[in-house]
Structure formats: structure tokens, C-alpha cells
Amino acid sequence: MTFVVGDNCIRCKHTDCVEVCPVDCFYEGPNMLVINPDECIDCALCEPECPVDAIFAEDEVPEDQVAFIALNAELAKSWPNITEIKPAPADAAEWNGVEGKLKFLER
Image 1 (cartoon, one colour):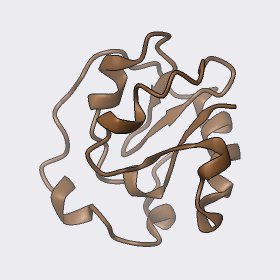
Image 2 (cartoon, one colour; image 1 turned 90 degrees about the vertical axis):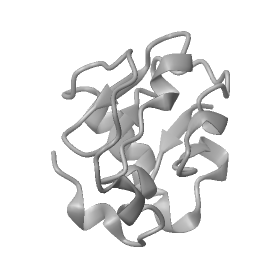
Image 3 (cartoon, rainbow, N blue to C red; image 1 turned 90 degrees about the horizontal axis):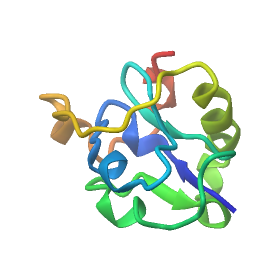
Image 4 (tube, rainbow, N blue to C red; image 1 turned 180 degrees about the horizontal axis):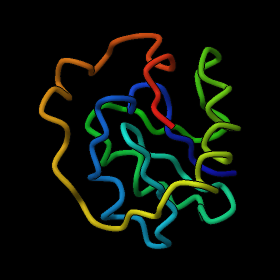
């Protein structure tokens, strides 16, 4: 099993999770982070660090976000690895909790 970054990370992109990851399995896109499922060791350290509750255990991904399991795997292959915390976007609070953000994903 692995962990998955879901919809609420889009345009929020807090990076608190990357700092606690012991295997550096986070990858950064223009407005979202993803987890490489081949590198994730299921330690669960990242999940409680996410201030917008965008990280889920693979078997607990909400039904409406199941597509993010494959999306994390796909995008982790082309996005650069991130290992250090960065400031969140200035408007992150405005995007927290907005539903249906997949259409805003920048690849």
C-alpha cells in the first residue's frame, strides 16, 4: 500500500509533508504535489502533516478521487523530486476545500 495526494492539494500545495518523508517520494508540479507509489514505504508520517488533509492511504482514497491513485504514479515519473519545505501559494487558504479542482491541475 502507498499514500496518495488528492484533489485538495491542487492550488494549495503546502509542502510540510515533504520534510518528514524519510524516502523523499514527493514530486512537485506547478500547483500540486504527488507521491511516487514505487518509493513510498507506507510510513504514514506525511498524512498528519498536510494542513489541508489532501493525503490519503491508498485504501482510504475517497471514491470521487480514485483517479488520483493513477495520476500520482503518472506525474511522479515526469515531475522533479522535492525534499525541502517551501512557502505555500499566497492564495492557498482560498483554495482549501474547493471541490472539483482537477480541472485546475497544471501539468
